[in-house]
Image (cartoon, rainbow, N blue to C red; front, side, top):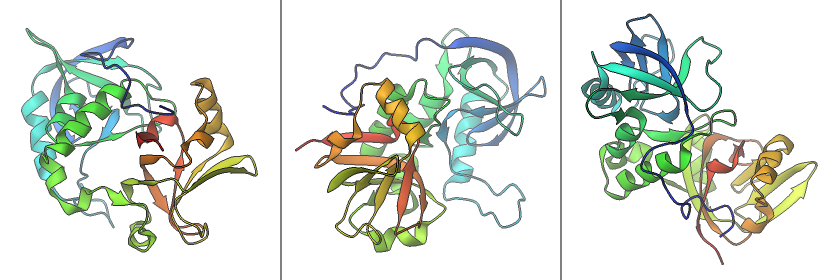
Length: 257
């Protein structure tokens, strides 16, 4: 099945990570960020929990943001943790980008635990793609069971065949499902069109840099024509609603023609 992450065998835990620093969680900033006793701020890479405004002007608390913060506190607050890395280790804000593990008699993988509780969505980057099959499986299980955020319409999976519903969501990170009507290359990029009118209907755009990542995995997005897919990414409104695809794991193939 072309581009299918769902059919990949899943390990019980993420393998191939590099062990990093140890510490104790002293503060839960929000549902995906913690402060260690060393002063290090850790962004839990691979997930996005509902955001808190945290006093920032123009921001608002997302639905269930408080619940997500409380869930992370129950898992990790005042507990010893180990950081493990599978990609870029520090972001532009100086935060450590790590898979976080609570250590002890039984090791707890924090990101997967948050996803299994329905308290976060998978959120990945081209330079941090480790563990995504396992994390996607955890998210899908919680969404199917309607746990946590998946009970709130704010986080529902959007329909690609309703572009008018997507336009007001510009600037939002969304999951979108639909059938690819046409896949074509143009100007060095590849376009997945979900409607007949590319300037009005929903489109996913894969640029030249991202296409090289697909090629590295021996994946050809042209094969997605006719496939039912689930995409994730930030919506913008250039020539109708669209999402830029930066790496293969932003696409899950649900069915092929």
